[in-house]
Structures are given as structure tokens and as C-alpha cells.
Image 1 (spheres, rainbow, N blue to C red):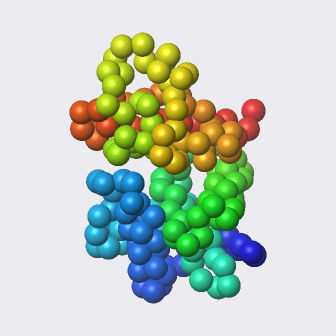
Image 2: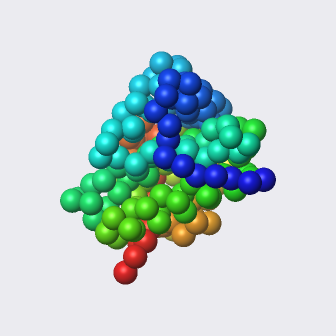
Length: 184
């Protein structure tokens, strides 16, 4: 499969497609994320802000995934938010290509680190539904991915769990914070 990464087109059809992908990508395992197409399209428009990065992956000229980057800490750190791949194209290298592209672009802008939050709202890891205020770092060290949580994808790309926000999405539903240094 030949994947081409470009700046996200800003025409209405592309924004609609990116919104559809966001809704579909998060539908199965993320109960509180972009439940409607309208919410997803609003997110796409927000990430198209001039200060952010918004990149699209094309296969045969069609958008099949996209990624956003948000500068923080005077550009020293960027947040990867969001990453959405159409379900038919997941596990085929599209996400990896988009993440690597974002890493390259933000490194060129002088950033040192990329962070991301990867919510566990549906008990996909052993960090869900436990008291994270008791032995947090041991629980992080012993994390298990029970149902295909994205944290394993990011770990394969060199990201490390750098923290957890307990109950970020409700009692027992943490946000797993990951990061990667992209230049020394």
C-alpha cells in the first residue's frame, strides 16, 4: 500500500471525510469521544488552526487517516491530538506513518518532546477501575493491555508512559499520558 502524507486539505469534502474517520475510529472502544459527526467535524476544524499541525494520510488519493499536533510550552513540547485511522486501514502502517511524519515536522520546528493522552474509558488496561492513588508507579510498571488499547501501539513507536490522570473520564477511567523525546 502506498501512503502519502500531506497537509490536511481545507475543502469541505476533506473536512467531512476527516470527521467521519474520527467518529468511526473512536466508535468501538471510546464511549465519550466524538460520538457525533458534528462533534468530529468541529474537532477537525479546531485542529486546522494555523498554529497547529494537521496532516492527512492518503491511499489512492483518498483520506484514510489524519493526525493533529498542538504546540505547548513555547513549542518545546507538542501534543499529538488526535490520531484517527479509518477502521478499514488500521494495522496497515497508516498510523505509524502519520506519527513519524508528525515527529519529523515538530523536530524541525525545534521541539524536544511529543506527549499524548490515551484514555481508558472501557477497561482496556489494568489501569482502569483500580485505585491509582495507591502504588501508582508499580501499577504503571505492571500495566497490561487487555483489549487492544492504543498504548501498545505508541509503545512500539518508542513512547513511554510518563503519567496517569486518575478518574479523568469518571471514576476508574484514567487518561494514560505518554511521551517521547524526539531530539536530544
